[in-house]
Length: 297
Image 1 (cartoon, rainbow, N blue to C red):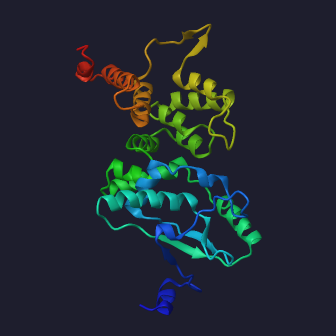
Image 2 (image 1 turned 135 degrees about the horizontal axis):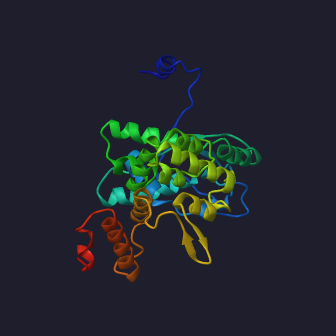
Image 3 (image 1 turned 45 degrees about the horizontal axis):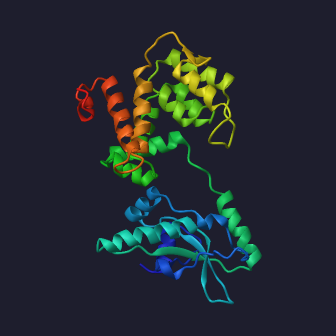
């Protein structure tokens, strides 16, 4: 099908040519004096993003600008995508696979306009909400994907996918509070298994006594929020609560967070300690065989 037919089939007014580059053919600006320099160019790509690119390639095209003085194709937007593609391709090539190319759109503009474009591409992005991510994760699972595959698509661990799915079954008051940003996603996970009345009480306490700071991942009220969610309050180092044992949903969420974090280092004392914590929590939740690896059973 020709270009004109493709435009007509999609009902598009025009077509923007897509360019495909080998990952080494585009240049990341690392010179601090260059107008297109952004200090985030030095950030290392996350392993989750590398795995995502390995599975799907670069989905959103990067934006490039041809420097007339050097002839180099400079990346205006998409530094982390390019770096992730390069790392992903190293793994793919070692396995004998076909490396991904970098899809790009070229923008002809003066340096000043290019800087404005670089800023705007970040400002115009809207982060997906936790509940919408949860619905997308559930849809992928319904279509036969595993939690690990869903995790790669979302850039999260399989344990995080389980937590997201748990949000879908949470009481409505919890889901609405997470969606609106009134409580954190992690607090939402922990309240997911409560009955409606208990969940409403906890959400009201969080909003009243430990309000979140919009736009900040770690709120100044985080400690107070943990006390409310866990149901205890410390005075002079002593926890006062109506019941001694923590609810099973709290233990389960701590276990998930530990498994999500993973061992700190192969063969280290920290790794043994981490494994011991995981085994102990599994035992608390009823897995009688969990302590076998520790030599305590």
